Amino acid sequence: MKKSNFGSLLSISASFTAMLVATAAPAYAQDEAQADDAADQPAIIVTGTRRTDRTVADSPVPVDVLSAADLVNSGSTETNRLLNQLVPSFNFPQPSLTDGTDSLRPATLRGLAPDQVLVLVNGKRRHQSSLINLNGSVGRGSTAVDMNTIPPLAIERIEVLRDGAASLYGSDAIAGVINVQLKKGVGGRAQATYGKYITTMEDVGQVDAVALTTGAADNPVITYTGQDRKRRDGDTYTFASNFGLPVGDSGYLNFTAEYKDRSPTNRSGPDIRRNYFAAGDPREATFNRYAHRYGDGVSKDLNFFLNAGYDLSDNIEFYTFGSYGVRDGNGAGFYRRSSDVRNRDWAASTTTFVPIYADGFLPLIVSEIVDISAAAGLRGALGAWDYDLSLVYGSNLLNYKVENSVNTSIGGTDSARRFNAGGMRAGQTTVNLDMRRDLDLGIGDSVSLAFGGEYRDENYKIVAGELQSYINGPFSAAPFNAAGGSQVFPGFRPANATDESRDSYAGYVELDADLSSSFTLQLAGRYEHYSDFGSTVNGKAAARFEPIDGLAFRGSISTGFRAPSLAQQAFATTSTNNVGGVLIEVGTFPVSSPVAVALGAQPLEPEKSVNIGGGVTFNMLE
Image (cartoon, rainbow, N blue to C red; front, top):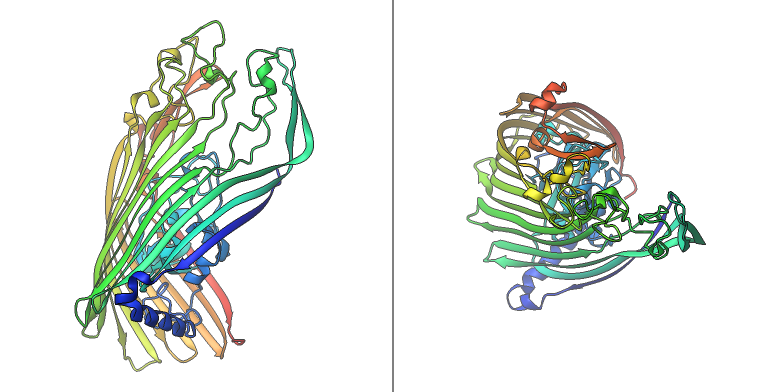
């Protein structure tokens, strides 16, 4: 089915400094002046190397840098959509009818899985979500970082490393690294945006009239207007504010708040089937033929981000940053017609078809997501060494609720219409120590040596839903054979509940050297040990050769790995389906469960990769 989308967006943006006039106006003016001066200088990157003077142009690996202005001027208010527009190798699809993935959507880099790209915030590992993507979603079977919890207004810039980097940063960096740098500046900005879709659905007819039929198996006769269906939906309101304050003589505090309200979209075609059980039912002529909902779900987001730092002395800086985000969203399932057996009230009559919902129903999966992160650290100089010691905690909680639904096996009178279906939780704690210094080895122009270590603890839980969300009621038995559980998403059963943990530790070393004015060499190696997967060693070599000023050749080769997430190892869900009148237990089982083992499942192993890249940079036309 083809469709053509035309989006209109009204954006109002204003800066405010009145609250800072008495204490911070000079600092704000200085901050803007420094920003103007920095715009004329080559961008220094902090991703793909731990050197402090490497620019995009002289990097041996490809790095895209997006500035705050790039993000603000793009017109979108979702970080994933911004990257999708601005980074060609980044893809952010919009799945529908995919359960929780309707509300927490994954993205991909370089066409690889969502969990094969590492996301950093201020250079520190960001936690993954608790959702494992199922059904027909992109990245099926993977978990991903929810980057839409990061307000674009909080971002100073984004660096996207399009090269394998597991030897530098560890697991998940097979496709590359996305490093989000938060704002530190003094001053403020408030923003309000509104947008909606103005869409023409090519070759999708607009229903004109419905003629009734009297045949027992006949569908109604539908006529069309002859025009393509038009939609005006997806209204999205975003209100965001960012402000920065000085803290004493040598500190900063930057805070961002964002609220976003998105209405659903619907790109479904007309349902031409008969909706009601009785032939010739007059309600057939007025029934909404677009009762299905295929498109964006409802989403209401509230996100906060804090970034702060203070110089404790000439050689020690304390820094901290963190976030708190809440999202209430919903996605639809398939519409259950009035005459659908899944809508039959067996408790009312076992001989006559009595619908529970008179006109049928559209069940909704409601996702309640809470995302929290907090980081603190010290960095500075210790003799000839630069150091960075940090502690980062992150968690993601997803609760499922099912609305406008029913557990048919209980009966229409006794069954709830709204269910608590349980949920998932994921947590991560990371401790990092990074050391770096310049060396004078008598070779080349400059040599940077870095080494460090990391400890990480992870936890994953599944919480069971309420009894009616998963139980097989009295009408599950023959001759009724009604499927149990809340329709569209049966709740997690107590047998699915789990609480799994693991830890890992790692050490790395990196050498980045300009051996001459035209030749750069980077070498890196990393050892990592997981409590559930054992040890792995990975390495990387990258080089850049510039025979003529402005023309350079670069390439890299590296090995990588990704340890399967705890969600991939421990996720479990079961439900009862009615297949041809026979009730069958179906489910997803961990590879370690007796059922999976009996079916031939093998223990998961770390993913391994070899990345070979090369390219040419041309910079002669500045």
